[in-house]
Amino acid sequence: MTTDKKISALVMMSGGLDSMLAAALLKAQGIQVTGLSFETPFFNANKARAAAKLIGVPLIVEEFASELLPIIEHPKHGFGSYINPCIDCHAAMIRCAGKILERDGFTFIATGEVLNQRPMSQTKRTLNIVAEESGYGNRLLRPLSAKLLPETEPERLGWVDRSRLLDLNGRSRKPQQKLAEQYGITEYPPSAGGCKLTEPHFAGRVWDLRRNGQIKNIRAIELLKIGRHFRLSSTVKAIVGREAAENQQLDSEAQPGDTLLNVEVIPGPTTLVTGPATEANIIEAARLCARFSDARTHPEVIVNVKSATGPRQLRVAPASELDIERLMI
Image 1 (cartoon, rainbow, N blue to C red):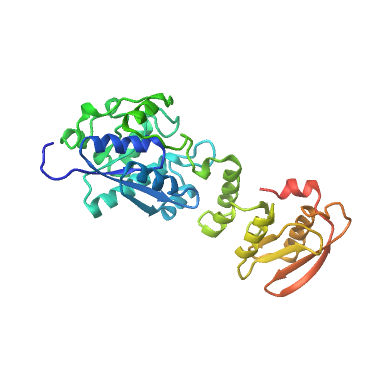
Image 2 (cartoon, one colour):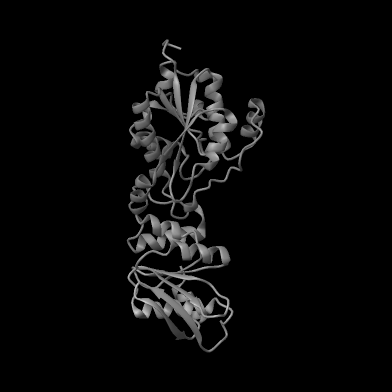
């Protein structure tokens, strides 16, 4: 080391094996390691909390929705397979890490990224873009692939020993698994991410919010995780519960201005209508509610309606398959 000052690294931790290994590699060099993880409606820090505990490092958890939602609305580098703006997201995370570095006096930032492990966000080109656009590329180290990447300031200034860093490349997990054994890391989650923006069905629902100008509505995003979703207008949705727990959750999620529906007497779902619903919207939602009840084959069904104007009942025919195909998100 070229300085007597204690070297400290802020290591981005997803909770996966790669970030655990990056932290372990730096700890082995006598560097003081603190983990950093983020939380949004699309991913949480639960795995990172468990991983940090397993390898014995403190963890900082930061809210990231306020950074991510504008990126989803207008991603400079576009999306991955679904609605995952990975390049812009990673750059924003490093930028946030840089602010914490300055605030708390860390020496440099490290990540568990592996060159060419992911075809969109971990090529040499995209790693360089993330470093440059974050504004903290000079303080950024990727220990698992450092020997295949340009030398960074932590290496040039002797904060880390480059010769003890790695040259991992590609999608094979075998080198990481072998390294985990060496460090005594026996518990870690599978390599798959955990970001719901990469889940096809959920991503379709997020696309719908984006198309209808609601991508910054946190409540609307949280509701995407419950039930079947139907678009009734650009500002109105119906969410139909799939089982008893979801019915209870939808009932508890209702706010002033929402409408709740359920079929009279006959077992069926709770249906939550959000947004400024018209009478036509309410009738359409009632038909959907009836369609997913035990009365789906009845010619007419009585549906209870609870809204700001008070309780009432509607008699409707259950929605058809064509209605479902037309409205379902």
